[in-house]
Amino acid sequence: CVNKQRLTEDSSTFRYLIDELFQEELLIDDFEPEIVTLFLTLLEDKTVDHIEVNQFRELHKLSVVFDVKWLFSDCRKWLEKKMDQLGTAADYNAELFVFEECLFIYQKWDDESPVKDLIARRWWKDNSVISSADIWKDTTI
Image 1 (cartoon, rainbow, N blue to C red):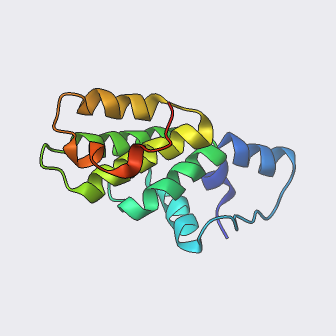
Image 2 (cartoon, rainbow, N blue to C red):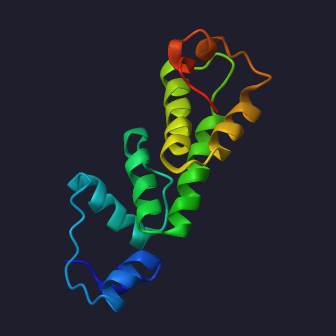
């Protein structure tokens, strides 16, 4: 059970479902229970500084689905920090994670800004880690 105000304060979607459609119970069963719990905690804490890499995509999706603008913005800033942390001797998994998340955002919501941000941040660096990989195959932007 979650406080109504906690849900409706930052989310136009929750506001609509609860205040206008008079939904007393909402099931968020398209997401893992741990992510939903984290999402609800973040709605109260209002900080995404300490999320894990494996939590990012689902939290970002929740921010879009439930129209939580501050969470959407903070998730994007978190991803941008990950982009900035990629060094010239970057770890392949870190490069791959950032690339896949940017590509997912583009493919899911037709939002190319993260891909463009990644390219702008990486164009002058040693990209052999990602350019040698097969991750660009079948990708059109």
